[in-house]
Length: 434
Ligand code: URA
Image (tube, rainbow, N blue to C red; front, side, top):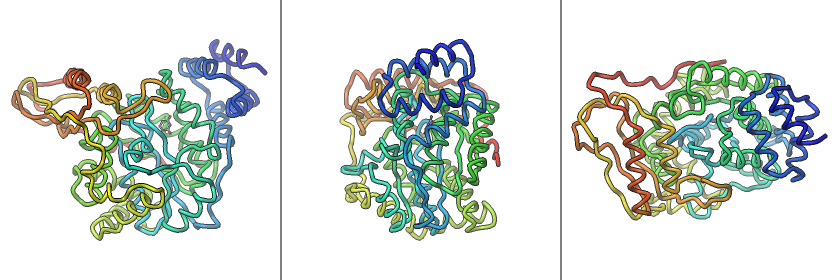
């Protein structure tokens, strides 16, 4: 088989065969195909799409590119969650310890930043020493010992996703439904969860801009999960504005810590509860999502979820003194306010533009292998529907370079739409797909 044949087939809108998809993933994992040819194939997939059969084949091939964990010798029932990607989405950092503190093991494989969307692994690497690389034996050992693991694609687990993910990040091929579905579900299948809650984002800061697209993505991922024998539920949640207030790696870790202490933004906490409630119910700990949310609130109030977060930081060699005292997390040299340019109601936000503004500040990668500046980003409490007078503070910009700070200010102001009429606040959740 030849990669050029596959690129040309897909370019011309012809379906790839199961054998061809398997060959491509095996050869790319073995470093037998260069990135430039895979980038061309990814772009052809971006434009031509994939059938349901091709998407399932791609998912299974990526999941099978490394080992596939069976966790039942260390935990009878493991739950996991995954977001389809958004701006300011630090949900995992709160939800995983909440659910683990309810006595439910959570073994999770996360990702780095992807396009305009931040990545859980990059955020956690704001903490000195914290790492996600671990052997399968260590994954299991940590799950048995403390009930939570936050890992990433490694050479052992879904290695093909690690390579494709890094390439998609810098080749404009992220926002493709089959590539997102295969990337997410391959990781979920490989990491051995019995139940999976998918947080499918919809809106201006998501890869799926309409409810219809988000529903299609949710449906195919739920179907892949169920076919693989995993209980799978998808929430379609709003991403027309950043989640919570913080955007940027260390700033988001700090907001997650505040939220675990009961001091985080209310809307973000509500979102965490929606996801945690589903996970707790799927694990059979409660009969309803409402009871799951009540249990999650109780373990937060008792400090048990915070304790789990600390345990995970320590187990993965992070400097726990930094999470105990978040002032010691990376801090930007310049912190300047973002002021409202006019009086009015905030009517809309281009949240993807906000995400790219953070990437350009240094909070994400413009090229493969770029170093991330963990300190930079925004605190943006202004939400759609809020009223402001000209000159009111909308938020703050955290930067290490004054030119980049000026550019970020212009980018942020250009991302906001104002109205003289009242604008209703946005819902958190649009649909639940089971
Ligand atoms: N999260 C992933 O793991 N992959 C994607 O493609 C998008 C979000």
